[in-house]
Image (cartoon, rainbow, N blue to C red; front, side, top):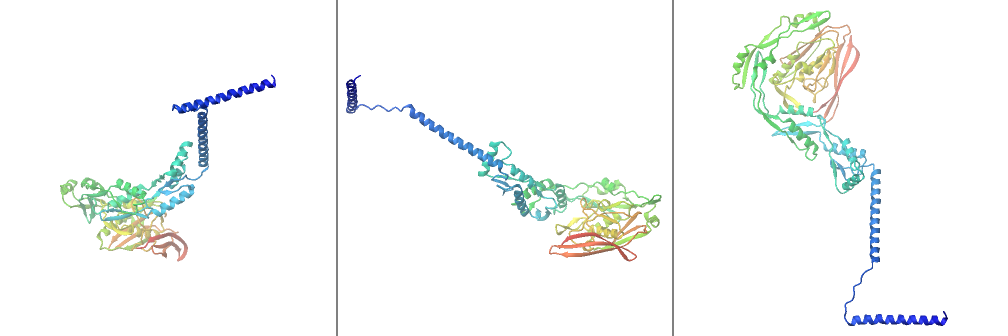
Length: 529
């Protein structure tokens, strides 16, 4: 194609293009002049697809961020060796603390919050119980372990959920309360005998040659199970532990007088004393005891049990051979003796002393045999004839059943030491008693505290005891040995504070007046009055 032809073709196309543009302009002008409606603009598919792509990218970015954050959060929790945030133990915040720090913080809080004793009340009556005596403690170690395991015991999602939830909330772990329920039960049973409106059981005691039976009266006793639960709740709740705790009580009627039972308890066959030479052994005599009237006559005397008191005459049944009859041969030598003074004005206390002394009097202990005060004397009960007399309870003087019998224990203790017998169990009082000096006493509580000693000699010993005219006296008889020593006791106070007295005692053995040995008997601490 020639150049001329090409120019004609271009010119032709330009003219056609100008015509088409003019047609479009005319068309637009006509539409506007005719006021015809303008057609709606329909978006094309391409912009829509573009918007969806952007949204997908944003979602992907958000998910990625969440996954990364989850992995970082999970990794942090896996590496974290401390308790997570928001965890409390007994309302103590232990967030972000190590186990040892958490234990120290919680233990310090518990120690500072717990008092030394709790107060119990019933009406106007109040008493206290030492928390250390009933072994009160909290299982802080296990509670700290439980606190540490929060957010660590489930799968990744559960653990992360716990961690997040504790950040905005609070998890409180209560440590388990531990206490000696057996000891607490014993304390509450003792308190039950001290209530001002307590039930009074029928009882009996021996006075001269008569059995005196007293009728019981309805009253209250401590509801032990309910009171223990109340005490547990109060100890766990530090906000009320310093307030007096109400003793739960229940009404109880006394047991009816049972003549057959009383007779079986007081009746005793007499036993003749004897001893053997090969091997050498002594068997002491024992007096017997019985009603001086028939059982049917005693039942008729009681009748409908409407009286407050009944008297049944008694008779002593004597053995044919008494221990004193063989005393010269079996127990020829006085090994030791010791006595203390008591006030005859307090008849109830004197009765308690006599009952305990009578149980011990005439006891024979074979070589190697151990004497147990609680076993020989028995439980101090109303049924056994014991009276209420002053005793120490939580630093106060109150009336308690069998009050005063520790004077018999202390007197016997000194006689035992002077006889150079082996003391195997001895406990001092809370306060220095009036009848012996510090470190020369011995206390007993039936069922928990005993006084025991062993006959470490080669021959039997016999214990004589009397309570009369304001003097409680013990004598220990036996057979002297070549290796016996002269015995002295040295006791003295070593220190005093505003609240305590400290003392100690030594047993000094001498031969021909020369000291051979000095042995520590005890170091004791007493409360001051």
